[in-house]
Each structure stands twice: as C-alpha cells, then as structure tokens.
Length: 141
Image (cartoon, rainbow, N blue to C red; front, side):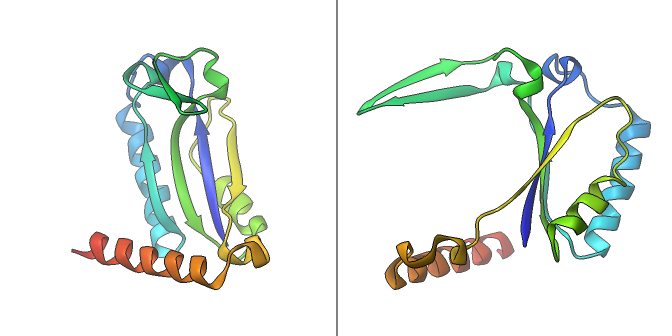
C-alpha cells in the first residue's frame, strides 16, 4: 500500500525560514532509513504559499489566486510518498521521524486501481498501466 505523509506548515515554514543543520542531518538519517527499508518513493519540502497559487474552477471559468494563503495549520509544507505493507507500518515509521516542535503529521492511504472497482474499465486500467510505465521510464532516463 502507498501512503502520503503530509507535513503541515508552520508560521516559520510560511515565512520561508529554513531548518537548521541539526534537523537537516536528523531528517537525512531518517530518510536513509526509509530508503534502506524500501519504503521511500518520494519526498520533498515545499516553498511557502507566498510563492504559490491556487486555481478555482467554476464551470469553464478559471480564476488564479496568488499566495500567500492564511491559516498555516491547514497548509502543506512538505510530503513523503511511502510504500508500506499496511497503514500500521506507516504509523510506526512516522513515530520515528525527528520532529519535536509540536508538528502534526497527516497520513493518508493513496487510492490504488482496485479501489475503483468496475468504474475503472479495462480500457482505463490499460491507460493507467501505460502512463505508469511511461513515468517510470522517464524517471530512469
């Protein structure tokens, strides 16, 4: 199963304050452990919302809203994508993360093809497989 691990923003991350060397070293060790365990598929930090935008969809109309956005506890500062045996394994791994400042980390299972049942027709399944193979070949190039 794949799990998205969502790191929430803080006033510091929204101000663009970078973590110190100590935390970067600890996070590097944690990420190494994830890689060695075969769990880490992707993981990145995000720039503050002041450098971002949102696009609102209303019928055919598209409205671009420039950041920054309010209420930091609802914003995302970074993420990991993990491949784990089950959700409990993901929870056990995040408990080992080197956070200590009151962070709240959200974990959410990623939909897999079988979750969509019959609505995902054989043609759509073939398209998904083809796109996944194309993405894989692009990332290996």
